[in-house]
Figure (cartoon, helix red, strand yellow):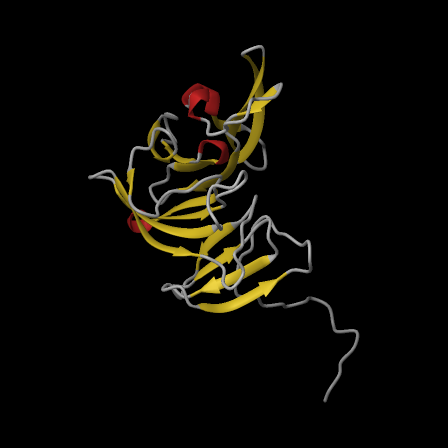
Amino acid sequence: LVVSNEVRPWSGGQVVGGVVQELALPSGKLLWEWHTLDHVAISETEIKARPGPRFDYFHINAIDVAPDGNLVISGRNTWAEYKVERRTGRIIWRLGGKRSTFALGPGANFEWQHDVREHPGGLVTVFDNAAAPKEEPQSRALLLQLDVTRKRATLVHAYTHKPERVLSHFLGNTQLLSNGDVFVGWGGSQYMTEFTRTGEIVFDAHLPRGGQSYRAFRFPWVAQPTDKPALVVRN
């Protein structure tokens, strides 16, 4: 799956839409294509400032394959996640934004989000930037539970950085670990943090001043070089 942009004429200027493509490898043959401008109205944008000559109304910043094989697409500038049927391209549901399929419970809202992912059992993870411009005091990593029958989204837990009140204006991600912990990359801020499921910090690190990472992940790592060591030190 790859993402690109397209530009179309709009209101005396141009509007920028997102394009999702599924390509066969290694041939590069196009298997499937989806355009935001064909499925999501420009009026769904949450950008309140006057558009410039090129208006990026949607801004795709994440794609994920859902447990049922359909696609989950995050629109940063619409404050919404879109579940898209892979076969037809129709929108199955929206989470967040102006036309949310789900009623959002207390604390389940998000703005300018990144890295939206759907997990088995209706659990959804979101990195809620809440900026920029600033909508909340600090960014949060969210665990949301979807009830697709009653069309409700409930906050399971919100993770915030302590003692720093991190507000990440861009980038960021939320990773579920196999032990039940939650690992958070704070994007435009230099921090990366591991929480227990209940919110206790068990690991916290940061890059040098001014450092940032689009996403940060924690995985087991083993090095098995194919050549012999050049130097060995024994203590």
